[in-house]
Amino acid sequence: MSTPPIERRLIMFTRYPVPGRTKTRLIPVLGPLGAAELQRQLSEQTLAVLLRSYQAPVDVAYTGGTREQVRRWLNGARIQLYEQPPGDLGRRMQHVIQGAFDQGARQVVLVGADVPEVTPKHMVDAFEALAGHDLVLGPSEDGGYWLIGCRRPAPVFHGIDWATPHVLAQTIGAAKRHGLSTALLKPLRDIDTEADVRRWLPQQAVQRPYLTVVIPVLNEAERIAPLIAKLRAPDIETIVVDGGSRDGTSQAARQAGATVIGAPRGRARQQNAGAAQSAGKVLLFLHADTRLPGDFSAQVFERLMDPKVALGAFRFKTDYKHWAMRWVEWGVHARSVLLHLPYGDQAFFMRKALFDRVGGFPDVPFAEDLLLVRKLARLGRIELTPGAAVTSGRRWQAVGIGRLTLINHLIAGGCLLGVDPGRLAPLHQYGSKLKKRRNRRPGA
Image (cartoon, rainbow, N blue to C red):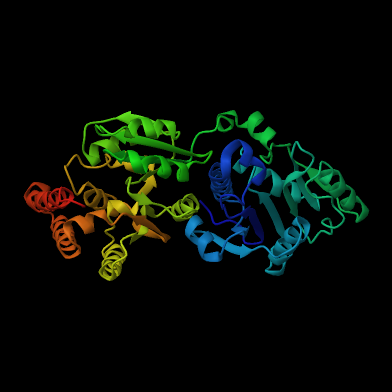
């Protein structure tokens, strides 16, 4: 394929997806995460269309994020990035288009990122129209336009009532007043409102979760309801997988609003069972004795905006107020960053498609988290969020800080060296016996 003509320029006009701040009019039907996810999908789809058209070099004019965030998201390949300036929509579009002309372009086409029907042929048609007209517009069915192109700076961005049904007519009127000839492309549908989603994307209108939180439990009746309450959101699904509790955990979880299923005891089996029942695009595996930060879902979304991230986890912290635990927390952070080996109590999260691709958690009695990390590390990066997941210090209190830390390090080291989990089982069993023995003591 030949190189696109440099005297032309294609610009995608978009916003970096941030839950709660992106496609806000769609939040009532999609939820904050779902609306941001739709923005991500539409932007990526539009960019792919522009690149496949081979009509011009492609720029991305963005707002709502930093240059580094957008570069990681879109991978920076074959595109240039420009931050949109402050101001209303007209001022921002005029600035971006003028910048392309200042760099030597003779024909500039700018496309919005919320039109699911756009194709490479539309780009071909736009540049062909500019061969005989000063201005080309792609009308949208709500009275605006999804594309604008010109062959010289066009003063058609002032005095427009943006976000109203009058945008297209007012723009055409401005072009006529300045003696600009105008061509119109075929009208397309953009996705801006709840009615647009229900009409043009009915499969999106039936809200499905973006995120499924899977919680394996065994006798956690006292903890489970408060935990579920902090996870509740319109685009988050919570699945509690009970491995045979006898203290009413399942009933408490149902009353708190979670979906409850049973599975054979064992964290790997329980988590795999929950994943198999999930409807979310992203999975988060949460231990019942761990608490997530208040904005955990936004942190998950942000980490997975980078397509090269295979698995994310939260920073490690405990509620055990002992000076030695600060050293444990520091050591876990160092291991997670330097060796890319977080533990399961740091709340793993990943795309469900990738989890299914690697076959889920290995069916082993322990160290399933470390073995999954090793598999996923071959497919992408392992990243931490800035926020911390706070896990209960009950294990360190029961076993002893020094003993449990040593056991964990020996097991992690063995997994890194490829030692069969069966050979490491005595270490794990020793820690479990110490915990049970301490718990049976009076006052423990």
